[in-house]
Image 1 (tube, rainbow, N blue to C red):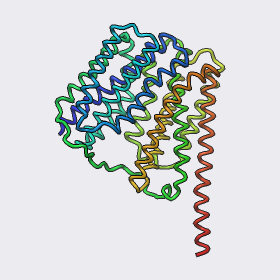
Image 2 (image 1 turned 180 degrees about the horizontal axis):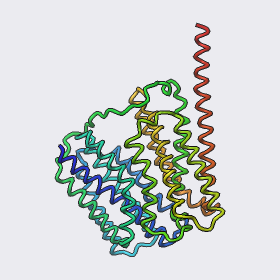
Image 3 (image 1 turned 60 degrees about the horizontal axis):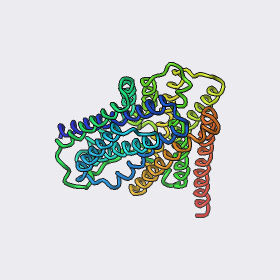
Image 4 (image 1 turned 120 degrees about the vertical axis):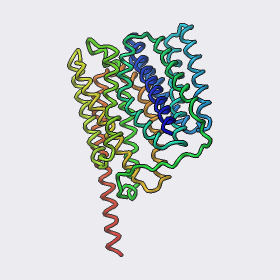
Length: 398
């Protein structure tokens, strides 16, 4: 089992690296170097991030563990065909978006298929693989930026094929799953109180807050290239480093500090910190012709930590539900929200920036997040107080 897990971890590293190298390459080699408009940047973001979110949702439902290896082999064949088309054809910008969309679908297929193998063979391996994935969220873009600095787009896509080939070659050395029955995973529950379960109305508020934070932050992420045009002396390395820095929160908080984010207050603090940060950024962008790279690094570091603080707190609150079916339903809804918000956020960002400018976008996002954090706290507190008052009134008449 140890050797098997080691091989699966290798697949995780190779496939994750392939994803991040390709993402940095698309936005730098095409988005930045070709000076794409904000609308085209939004379309590219949708083609990559939106496609991955969409296919992750579909593949999670459709892929069966016993067919995982076959699906991976088919995916590799598709990836090779796509590279041959890229190498032999002169793809215009319209076609390149379709190409990126299909590449993202391949990434999703390999990632989900690999996860399906873990789900029926080794929970320990699945947990370790998830930690590797989170670590690669931080280190992957940084390595990607270094690679992109020295290779052209077609060579990077060839590297993508090689990485996927090595991933799937490793898969072939693993015994195929013989069942589709998932091993029962025990969720880590850090909130033992049933206060949220008794006040189910608060989850409607939390879901709305999740939608707002997801769609607004996707707008910001989709237009990172636009911001980099305002910075002097930038490179693919600094671009990858910026994306990697934003993933430090995902790696540290969700991997090692999840159990500390059990207070609802962290949710509102995250919104306020990120909101104030965006307002400051918008004001700074509006009053300065150029932006220091260190400022962008600091913003994405704080923003990434705040984002993960919000998502981890929400996750812990949902895990407090004793009814497993209801808990999984809420997580499914969160997944749907992410698919919709990532797509809408990416596609709308370009039109918004074209209309009002990048500085105003940051300011508006900041105000939206700040107001959401304040109103969320007020509404949730009101729901709790109403429930407590109702309980007291019932006791009086008993």
